[in-house]
Amino acid sequence: MNKDLLYQIALTLIHNIGPVQAKILLQQYEPAEVFKARRTDLEKMEGIGSIRAGNIKDFDDFSTAEEELAFIEKYRITPLFITDAAYPKRLLNCYDSPTLLYYKGEADLNASKIIAVIGTRSHTDYGKQVTENLIADLAELQVTVVSGLAYGIDAIAHKASLKNNLPTIGVLAHGLDQVYPTQHAGLAKDMIKEKGGLLTEFRSKTKPDKHNFPTRNRIVAGISDATIVIETGIKGGSMITAELANGYNKDVFAFPGKVTDSKSGGCNYLIKNNKAVLLTDAQELIEIMNWEETTRKEKGKKQKELFIELTPDEKVITGILNERETVHIDEINLKSGLSSSAVAAAILSLELQNVVVSLPGKRYHLS
Image 1 (cartoon, helix red, strand yellow):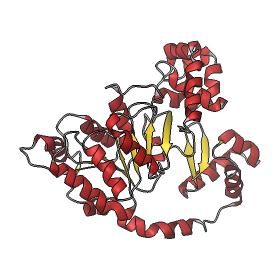
Image 2: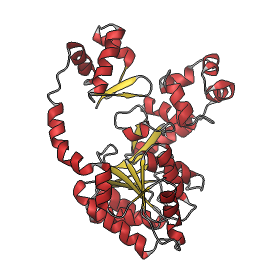
Image 3: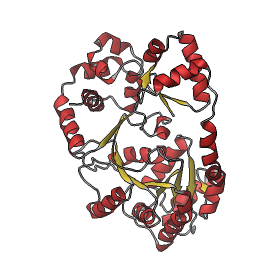
Image 4: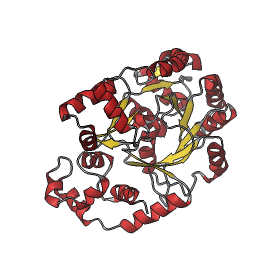
C-alpha cells in the first residue's frame, strides 16, 4: 500500500478542510504528520482554529481513503498531489488550487499552450462553426484544448480537437468511475485513446451534483493560459468560468454575437464590461498571446538553457534535486553542506533562471 498517497487522500476527506486550509497545513506538515500533530499546535495555525483542529484529530475514515487507493491502482489512475512535480503548474498560482487531482490520460497538463474553450449547452450553428474554425486554425501550434465534456460547445471543442489531432482534456464534476453525460462515454474513450485525458478532483463514487460544477469550472479556468467563451447567455457555467479566470488574472476572450441573440448575451456582456477581449478569429488569439513568436523561439530557448552557467553552490543543489522528483528544503540544507543563507541565495538564483520551481510545503524540483 502506498502510505503517502493514503494520507494525501485522507487529507482531502477531512470535514471543513478545503484546498486553502490544506495549503496552510502543508506549509508546516507532511500529509501523514497532519494527523499526528498536536491539537494545540493545529489550533494556533492561522486559518485552522479549534473547530478544524478538532475535525483533524477526530478523523477516522481511513477506510474510504483505502477504497480510493484501491480504485486508483485497479484502473491505473494517476494521482497528482499539490507537491508533485507533475501537478499542473498553472493551478499552483490559484489560491484555491485542488489539493489532489485524479487523472486518466497522456496529455501534458503542463503543455506550453493550453486553452479552455467553453460555451452554452444549447448552441447555434454559428457557435458550432466558430468553435470548429478556431480549433482547426490553431492545429499547427499544437495547442492543448480543455473543456468540461458537457453538451454543446464543450463537446464540439473536444470533437474538433480530435479531428485536428490536438490533445484535449475533459475536466469532470464527478469521479473517474463514470462519465456524465453518459452519451459522452464514447467521446471520453476517444479522448483518452488519442493522447488526451480526463481530469477531476473528485474521488470515485462522487455523483455529478449541481454544486460540483462551479468547483470544476475553477480547474478549467486555472489550468489554461486563456479562456475562450464561444456562446453563452448572461447566466450559466461559462460565465462563472470566465469570472474565475479573471479572478486568477488569466486572459479571457469572447466571440461577439447579435445583440438580439440571447445565446450571445453573455459574450457581449463580457466584452462590453472589459471582462473579455473581443475575438473574431484564431489569428487574433495567436497575436495577443504572442504564440507565433513563442513557437519560433521554443527550440532555440531549450537549446540555450542547456548552456546556463551555474555557480558551484547551484551545481550542488541541482545535483541533489536531480536525484528525486521533489526535495524538501531541510534535506537540501542537510545534503548540500552549505549554510542556510547560501542555499537560499542559490535557490533564488536558480528560480530566476527557470532552472528550479518552488512548490508548497518548502519543496523544490527541477523545471
